[in-house]
Length: 108
Image 1 (cartoon, rainbow, N blue to C red):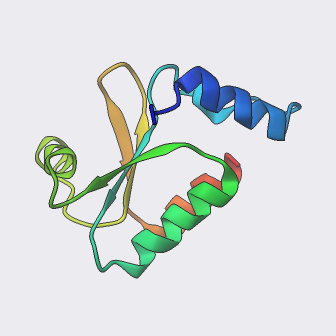
Image 2 (image 1 turned 120 degrees about the vertical axis):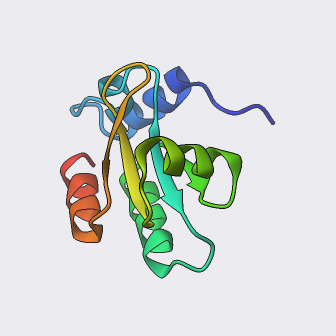
Image 3 (image 1 turned 60 degrees about the horizontal axis):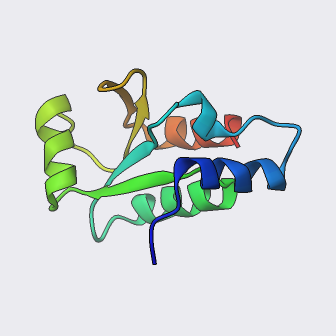
């Protein structure tokens, strides 16, 4: 099954709440990235919060190429870490668990 496009995801979010702009529109063609580790209970909680809020994201396990690239580029050594697109190639990140949850709830 092909991965849904950003337009599809945006459309689904708009159908769920047409009065609120879709989060993906703010990020243009990029999604949030979530750096995770396998046994991390907080990582699981953040993934659940993102899904419950209808916010699309890409999971980047720390032991996978996608996660290693984030660790090397941004020197982030903790999980979960939420990477938020700022431009075509640049992200800002949040590593504090309570700040990640706050970001999710403010953008849900």
